[in-house]
Image (cartoon, helix red, strand yellow):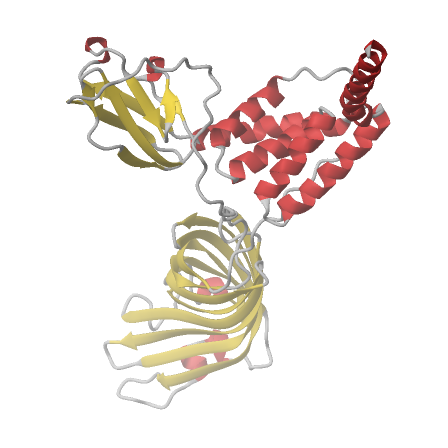
Length: 456
């Protein structure tokens, strides 16, 4: 009988030892095996995170971290905690990673993960809301005071403190000896919000047991349903439309025709411009412009009109251009080249009836550059442009004699009277001024690429 008992005891102990040692043997993995398993879990987590399944990715990263402690795991744990609404937990994970002392000769990926945590932590801190709970009557006047938040006991030491919480819905109730809330206080806390609520306990017959001992391990309230956050829009859209007006000074130069200097025909004056351009492929512009200016009167005029005639001098330009705009949504550089048609004219009207009209027309090449400064939907554009070309034809008409005697080009204006339309010469037109354009987005702004995965 005794032998049978001993045999039974040995068998039972053997069974227990096998049962206890079997899991230990399975858990007894080599360091290489743990690293390989951690890497496999990490890569699955990265794929899930990139696919917008942050909750599942979080579990993978936590498994990888339990197998092998690495900063590359921690940075992804923090990111997934933030994506699933666990902002408080994400903040603590970031803090732990930023304060971590990395050993010398740590992998570069570990250092990059820690540096990334330092960059992302400030923005996350701003998102974490706070909740301040106060109690009426004053807690010091109550006995056996208990507060619950979403059914979990809240330590009395937190009353009146603005403590960080996760965004979400909260049900707050309270009770004390002879007091209780009529119903739980229902509140919603949003990101970045600093919420303050008052829990009012009203006299009643509530019987309250001694408050439970707070262990510091009260689970946080459940997060709100996960929604993949919308990525911040970065960069300009692919297409758009810009249109507006500008004003500035126009300065002519060179020669009108033959040897006739522009300075003897007209000088600098104010003018206006209208611009319309389409933006394509984010940085390319195609458009047109119209400019008109009232030029100044030169010191030198034909003797028969000098000081005795009304003089009007004007020019207009109509052209098309193609340009480059680095970023329409930020202070950026713009440049363009173009081709257009210019008309230059002046008219003399003498009180005796003498009238002389002169005009010149031709093609011009244009080079422009400026700075675009965003101001809401408007763009402020200081700009300069340089046009150059030749007048292919000149025209003179009118009456040069008193009482309408026949026109004589040589008598009226010898300088142009002997010039032919083939006597072309180069001229220039310089512009400097300030414009205001309205920007209309016609395309969808691009979203940033998914965060590159850290390797370890």
